[in-house]
Structure formats: structure tokens, C-alpha cells
Image (cartoon, rainbow, N blue to C red):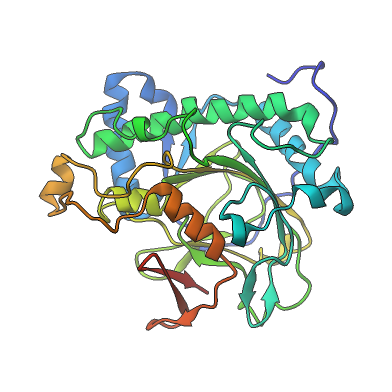
Amino acid sequence: MPSLTFPPTPLHTPPPSTKEKLDYADLAVIDISKARTAEGRLELAAEVKNALLTHGFFYVINHGYKQDETDRMFDIAEVPFSGVSNEEKQPYTHNIKESGSFQGYKRRSYWHIDNGVQDQLESYNIHRNVNKLPHPPALCPFLPEIEAFCKHNFFNVIHPIFRLIALSLEIPEETLVNMHNYDAEGETYVRLVKYYPRSEDEIKTNNVWLKGHKDFGSITILWSQPVAALQIMAADGNWRWVRHIDNALVVNAGEALEFLTGGYYKGTIHRVRQPPPDQQGYERLGIINFVLTDDDVELTPLTGSPVLQRAGIYATKDDNAPTMKAWRQSRASAFGTSELKKGTQQRVEEDVINGIVVKYYS
């Protein structure tokens, strides 16, 4: 619970929710508090399984953070953008293409969107070990709260979700938990991100601010915020909006989970596009937790899952299977900077990474 002893920060005032009638995705709502009992986990495992097989996205509620605690984190999320000058940001800005890591700042206009248009989002990425790298002085007073936030996410949200996924695959509950250790080498991190409104170039990018893609980790956790911009590709090939729910989390599957389940659970294609007309003048502030396995985990189908076996998916020796470290470094280096080739589908482009075709959708 935030207290008066915490350092002050400007209050982030969230924009009003859109009043536009949008075509929203019908996503499941998972009450994670039910996961405290064995009976509750079995019930939720079935719900998570259905959600992953239909949309690959679902909401999580009753996750242990109250609304005022969430509001405080959004106040803190503003600090690395409005509280740090462009000159002060420079030492904490890293070459993502060379390092294969998103840690620190990703500055605006680093990624190419389409037809010569560069992105207008800025992010500051913080490893779950908040002391792994130095931070701008303006952010340092908030590191204890950010660390508590990372630990809460990891042990009260991420691990319970992995237990539910394991149960849905009929394997021991701790199987995926043991691949995602808090103190192991890896790059699970929190991203504080701000999308700045664009006044032009929308026609050149078909109103897309970030191309449709799959995240390369296991799962991604997004703190719901009111500016409508996130869309998922539904099974019928149409884009549908993700509705804002106060103090809910939006969870989606990534490529690592797709690899670990042999494609049974697929990474979800999603994109960010221009908000509806009544929100187009607002900045879009976000908090995202990207969850990756430990670096040394080989991304091959999980051994012994009766569910995967019944689906005809078996774990076999694959000398070409990447480790999480190799996959996330390759994907981070190439994202938004590779020269993409046109795919066989309309408005689809492709890149080949470690022999695997990666697709991007406009």
C-alpha cells in the first residue's frame, strides 16, 4: 500500500475511456484469487486452456494490487519520460540491435513501421533485478517500489498463471514455474512505455503504430489502461479491440510458450493502432511485464504432457532448437530494424530468424 513516506511524484491522470462503439474481442476474465485452492486451480486451468485455445488473450482480476497501488505505479511510470531530460536519457539508452536486449531506454523513431514512417513510442525497460543496471537519478528513489512490484508480479501473478497452464497440460504444477526462476539468468522485465500521438503519416501506415506480431517470451502481462489502441487478430482473421477494464491485467501467450507446447498454445498476434477519434489527442502510458524463461531453457515441446501427446505433439531431440537466450537476443536485435520481405498473405511481411519464419501484420 502506498504510504506518505514514499517519494512524491506528479499524479498521472488517466484519460477518459472511449465512447466509440468498437468491435471488442470477447475475452475470458480469470479471477486469480481462486488459485489459492487446489479446487480453484483445476477450475481456472480449464478456463485458461479455453482462453489460450480461442484467443490467446485473457484478463486477470483480483491479482492482489488495489486500485490506489496500481495508480501509484502509473505515477511512477511517468517519471522516466517527463522527469528525465533528453540529455540525461542518453547514458541509459542502449543499442538494441547490437546488444539483443531491451534494457534501458528505447527512444522514439528507433523502429520502422511502414513506408518510411518510424515509431513514436518511447519505453524504459527495467530488469526484474532492478539493481542489475544503473538508472537515471530521477527514477532511483522509486526503485524499492518497482522491485516490490516486480516481485509481486512474479510470485502472485506469473507463477500462479504457469501453474494453471501446467494443469491444463496435465503435467506437474511446478513444471513451468521451474523454468521461470526469479534469481536465474534471464530477462523477464517491466516496460514503462509511452505512445505519443501522431498528427500525420497515418495513411502511410494504415493507422498502425506497431505492426501485428507475437511477443517472443512465454507470456506478457499488460496493466489495462483506458486509451484504446491494442487489437488482437481473431480466428476469423479480423482485428478486434481489447476493452479496458479498471485494475485488470491483460495476459497473452508468446512464442516461447508456443515452442514449449509444440504449437498447441500459439503466441497471439496483436498490434497497436491509432486510437478512436475521441482519444486521438492523448498520450498512451503503459506498464507491461514481459515474461521469459530462464536463459538456458531449450524451447522444445514439454516432455510427458498427455494433452500434447493426444494432439500428436511429442518432444524429440532437436539440435536446432534455440535456447531462450538465443531466441530473445535474435528477436530483440531484429525487431523493427530488419528488412522484411512480403509474405504470401496480403499485408503480411516476413523475416527469418534462426531458420524460423517470423511474421508481421499491418
